[in-house]
Length: 280
Ligand SMILES: C[S@@+](CC[C@H](N)C(=O)[O-])C[C@H]1O[C@@H](n2cnc3c(N)ncnc32)[C@H](O)[C@@H]1O
Image (cartoon, rainbow, N blue to C red; front, side):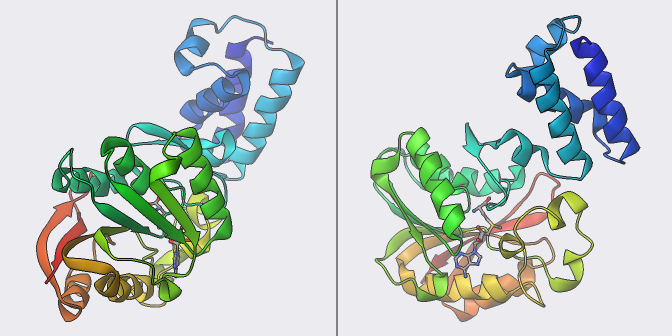
């Protein structure tokens, strides 16, 4: 069997199992099984596949057919300017979250040495992306998930920024170490009645603790803001990602906790998602 034939077979299985992006997914999974990039795959479609490669590919297809996200199968996700290793213990970094990174980089001069806290760091994608671009800054990432922290540490190691970052496995509720110039968080914010309507890829595979914001969706947002008001320096900046329908509610909580709203930024779908505020 050649690459083209096995590719078609993969697409067909995924299509039969209602995976909408069947052609693209089959290509990505075959490239991963062959350990080559997609452009090389396309240039070598008439090459014969080995039994070992075929075995890996068909195993990937079996997993994808059950809605397992591509990033978990191939083991990484590109975010900002790097590849982040991911597994079922961490949320898969979303491109909308790159807006938080972009806004923070606008705020921090290239030469300034700010102390940054990332609450609910997951794979470490936000804090590591910032530290990669601001070489004098230092960071702390915390997460309630021990396994997420393990992965964030690994990502820091392979990106060679181990020396400027510390990761702690802690509930934000109990965290009281130091004061920060900048705090960032993409907290879990899905409300209970929306959770069951999420795509199968998300609700059946990504960690519920990374998604669920309790009954009204605000339980973690509230907690993050309350704790940030203690952990942030005066005039420090808080950057938050929330659901598009949570802007008004979040602004209220921020005001109650002594934050002044600087601006609200839209995501890639032009929906208000990111709030930047200052502790006064
Ligand atoms: C939406 S995910 C964000 C992950 C990553 N920052 C990103 O943007 O891809 C939220 C993260 O918050 C963590 N988390 C949930 N509750 C927490 C708590 N009480 N204290 C600390 N971390 C928490 C979850 O384990 C999860 O990794």
